[in-house]
Length: 224
Image (tube, rainbow, N blue to C red; front, side, top):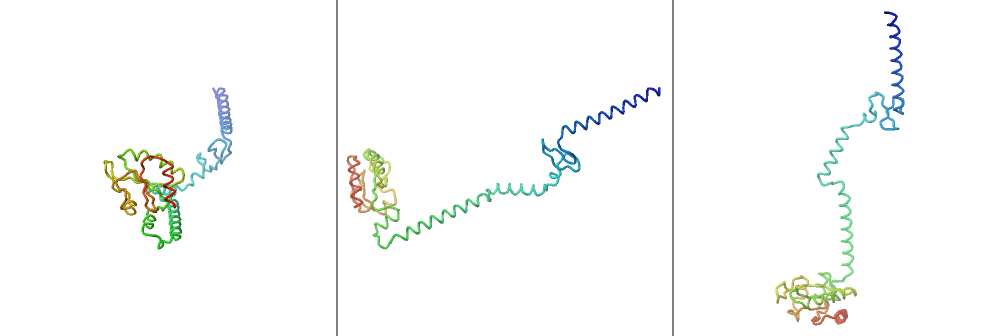
């Protein structure tokens, strides 16, 4: 009986030794990192002194600080992202300042005391004496015939200001725009459309037959 036990015991020791050797070989093949380093992704190693397959640098993270940062970011999102909007607010403020400065400089170049009441009225509405006013109605066909002529004149670098007279009810001619109410309260041909008016001298031209050359000549007379 003892003769059989000894050989079996020796065979067991050999088997266990072989298993350990194979396991170590497999571990060496599966990882390119030597202890105390841990291969946290293929080809990359990190220090793992406690051999728990977690990088020591990850274990040292201050999770409380991270949580506080996340809460702060969420708070900014809820309140309209104040951090991101601050630079935009500063840009808008700078643009507004530039506009105000430009307007101030332009105003300083104009001697308002030298302007007549009518010129002051035009200046109030950012208009010029060379502008041509096109007074039209929507209920008559004659005004529609002049629309392409007016657009053609604009293409020739003439400034034409269109203003609707009355409502959509036939026979209505009252002013709708404030610049007409204040600068042109009365007209010679108040109940006629289409009507062209020189902004500067208030001359009027009744649009009978649509003609771009006739209208251009009238616009040139307005500039003289």
